[in-house]
Length: 98
Image 1: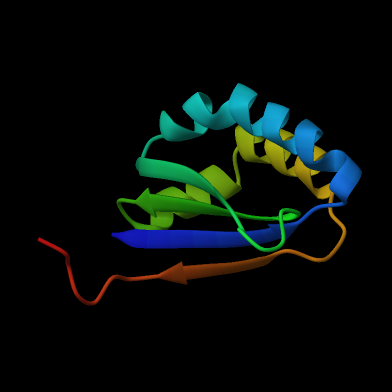
Image 2 (image 1 turned 135 degrees about the vertical axis):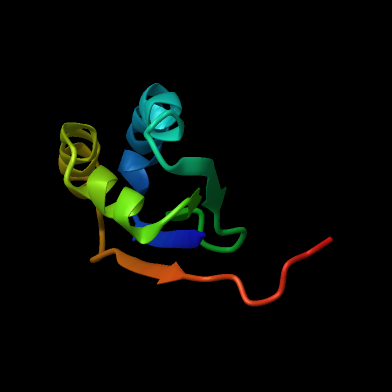
């Protein structure tokens, strides 16, 4: 399993637009082959910073998503709202919680 964490810093005036975009696309992302889990997090001290947290069955499935029309649509609309360049990490859990 691959865990993908993406940190995004939005312009304050674009937060509602991002939330609406995420709400309209989240079920399509969750339904993409290989996606097992998807959450959206917001920083408690800097409300312009959000994170997506997702689980993928395999790195190949994540890459298939990143090459898909769905991703191209979501990402093109999302990146237009950024205040800063996003950061992303693909990690493998080392200790599983019970």
